[in-house]
Length: 181
Image 1 (cartoon, one colour):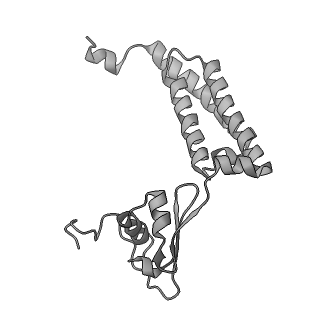
Image 2 (tube, rainbow, N blue to C red):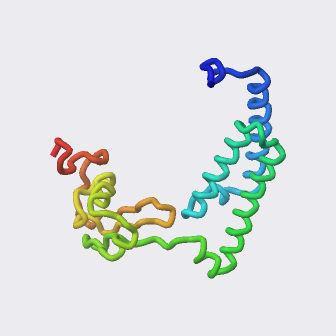
Image 3 (cartoon, rainbow, N blue to C red):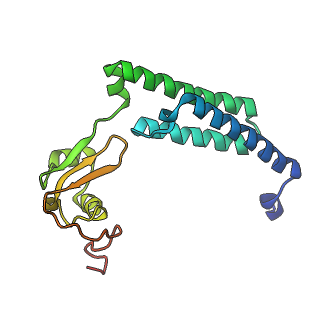
């Protein structure tokens, strides 16, 4: 059975390992990212986001797993960053590769009208669309010129000409059943 003391503190050597390996891994990661360029962490699409999360997970594993050596961890980081560089460089040169790794932005509202087929394809509910609109200061789709689901998963909202911008409300405010509206 695990004792409380073992969960709070095991040894000074374990703490020293985390500090030493963490510092070295951090310095190496910063150097790798500087060499590979800003594009490595740009999160322009879902593929980029997955690589960014994988890099963070790998760094955490290097820090906390006693079974992963510093050099194994740095090799994993270098592999992820290298593959990201190769894929992005190749996608710039090849439309076929670009289509495989990048999703296209999707128009969800155009001139105040919802694009129901696109919303269904992207699995966006009307309630979620209303939340997106409110967070952009719009009360309804008819006040939007466009709402675009970008390839990185974010939303771009442009107001229709003459639409009155409301104060941005937090998500959930004004929803039916929330008790506020």
